[in-house]
Figure 1 (cartoon, rainbow, N blue to C red):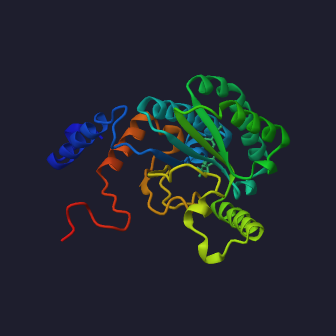
Figure 2 (cartoon, rainbow, N blue to C red):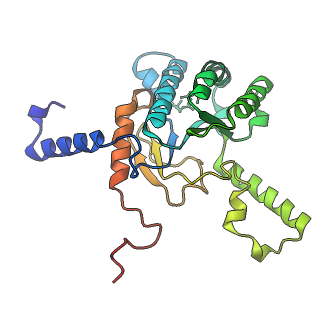
Figure 3 (cartoon, rainbow, N blue to C red):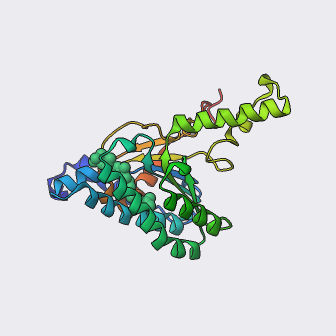
Length: 266
Ligand code: FPP
């Protein structure tokens, strides 16, 4: 919408938003440490352009690169991207195999560059059920980038939040049986060590593109106090500028973690 067609209140809102977005600078302590993204809307983006859904996924991959780059630039330490859920196997066979090939090819292409930029690539999900070639590459990429510390890029592939919790319960129960651990001595901290994200902070901000406003089985345990940001933009149109708008919105949130704001104790 053109500025001239906006009301004075609308103009003020635009200007404030622009100023907030411009205030997003590398190393800002108000930035989230960990951002998780549900990249949604690739199919609809393609349909709007009379293109096959797969073209939407290809365009989406470019945005993955741009947002990863932006996180490196801004000094955000963890970025988690939901690329394929345990429910996505229900899609047409052709689309599933296209996505598996896209994951394989893009990993082959970008790993060297990301490694040079000191990005650690990790995978969340049941990777042993993926095509064997992809599973092998994933293990290689994780090993190659394991020591990098600038940004941790978690790619959730064949990931489901409930599945993650169940496999963590299994691991913990096994440990409890082996070590004779009393059920009442089990802590949240011990439990999180069996999650795919063991050792990582919970997401501070979760973004979902495409206008849907739900979590869709993503990081169910980890998002207990995560700030949510929904935008109607389809993932292939979600560039660094809109990412910074989401970060600016996050900076304005008041996070209380169930407590009360500092200085308001009376
Ligand atoms: C959701 O849009 C998107 C996906 C299920 C796939 C996301 C994958 C990419 C962006 C490629 C990323 C590659 C790597 C290596 C991380 P949708 O298909 O559900 O869109 P729709 O809701 O409009 O149909």
